[in-house]
Length: 235
Image 1 (cartoon, rainbow, N blue to C red):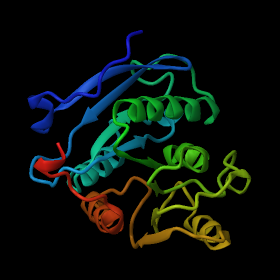
Image 2 (image 1 turned 90 degrees about the horizontal axis):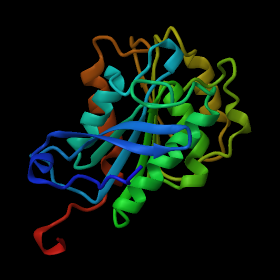
Image 3 (image 1 turned 180 degrees about the horizontal axis):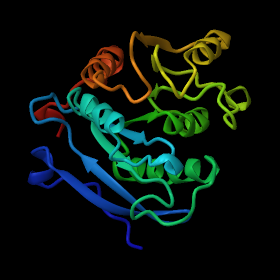
Image 4 (image 1 turned 60 degrees about the vertical axis):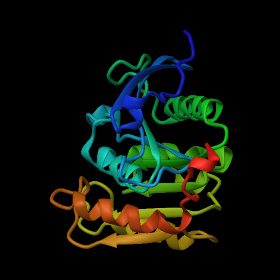
């Protein structure tokens, strides 16, 4: 499979999405790349966002994933969403988070090859945040964003993962019916270098009627860590 180039044509830079097929460890990986919002100051930053549990219908088109990507594009980042193995047009089969972490590694390697001068950020929702967290200490993103991480959930041993020690944001709904918020708070409190924690009152796991609040929480939470905007002189 030929390695696709990171899109930089005028239509893409105008805010349109490009669908690409990347090479992954289990075969093809379906991905969508979107440029920074045309009204935002473009930054040397690419954020890769991971989707929720495939066995429960999670895909890169999930609303929490897309609103997180939107918040980051409005902050000046380009974003990459992708389907884990066995989802959509991505080849392979569900692998309980192990193979999915390898899928993420492959996407990150492609981004860093295509955009070596850009910062790489990782983000994920629910199962996707678990996958991002598994790889964060190894991949060393400029920032890690975890939304409704399944800490304390069956099969998710967060204590066995080397904690990330860079800029880090966790957003958790206080009325989450899938992830126990108390387990998330206890996990955060157990860390020597805990992330910034945003608790969202009256908010369910899928952020029903709270997606705009989530968008604001992400934009506010990352603001201090954004790289300087690219100017014409830098190009």
